[in-house]
Amino acid sequence: MKRVVITGLGTVNPLGNEVDTFWQNSLEGKRAGGMITRFDASRFRTQIAAEIKNFDPQRYLDRNEIKRSDLFTQYALYSAAQAWEDAGLDMKNIDPFDVGVIWGVGQGGMETFETEVEQYVTGNYMPRFSPFFVPRLIVNMASGMISMKYGLQGINYTTVSACATSNTAIMDAFNYIRLGKAKVFISGGSEAPITPASVGGFSAMKAMSTRNDDPLRASRPFDTNRDGFVMGEGAGALVLEEYEHAKKRGAKIYAELAGASMTADAYHMTSPHPEGLGAAKAMELAMEEAELNITELDYLNLHATSTPVGDIAELKAVAKTFKGSANLWVNSTKSMTGHLLGAAGAIEAIIAIKSINENIIPPTINIEQPDADIPAGIQIVRDEPLQKNIRTAMSNAFGFGGHNSTLVFKSL
Image 1 (cartoon, one colour):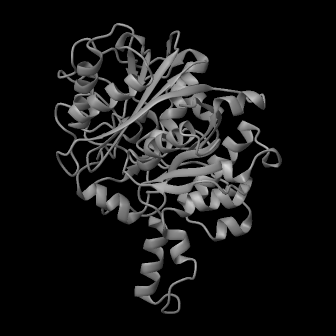
Image 2 (image 1 turned 90 degrees about the vertical axis):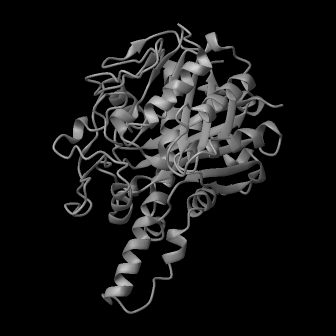
């Protein structure tokens, strides 16, 4: 099997509109939550979210790209442009059929769907839909438009596995490169879910925090008083490249993607298995593929979204898999960013990779009273970043429907 490395990173998310700002704010424990400004959320139980600030799509997108795309696709193009630039790729020297895009999106063009249907029903415009309705709506348009922007003619599609989606996309790209089906991929995920229907739907499920009077502290994984996740938005992009190809062109290499796996809980539509059995197996298989034993993993970025059931189920899975390894430290950066749904795995993969590069782990914030059910031996990075020699890092992403996905990165 061929080796796969990461040679480019890009993001736009509630903690920053590029990687360096995102990384620095995560180390400082910055909080991104606030009252929803996109629409009037006063009728919902949940009225808070982690919105992106000062987003200017014209930095990387032209007028036609903006006009023809939903916000989730704009986020995708924006982050992919950063990753492409960071990787220093030049298509003059690469066969376009060797470069592909595999992107992850959970919901797609929710804003487009809501706006178009409302306009049709109310008759505010002519009683017809825009010719851009379907192209802006469908989830695969992000991967399509990234390929068009750079002339990438290799494998191209979009994965959907709820909040596991980004990891699913990255895993697929990893496997295609290992099998020799491509030399380079842009992969990651994007989501633009801060809309009335999306917020209203998750609010009706009682999945989100209702700490409307304290939005900055509402996302609190592992805290006794956590009451649900805080919705976030944005995108994360990674350039995955075959190792020898990257080395030959003198590329900057951030880390090696050494293992990836997926499992299913086969348990419940929205709740994880209470003992984390599927999650534990996903981590076990990813470690096995990366040829690591349990004492060799230094850092794990948990999926932990701040839900009463999910956080402890995942920690039980960690305890089962790593059996109290003294070397392992864990955190949840969703305490700062909120939960980006289909984009969560991508931005957390970036955190894992940067932690390897910088030998430091960002903190988990807002833990005021740790849950009494946290298994013994779990070491959570709290309040302040942890300086530590990090050669290996794992990132988990789980989704409604029982999807579990895990990535393992190594330093070279």
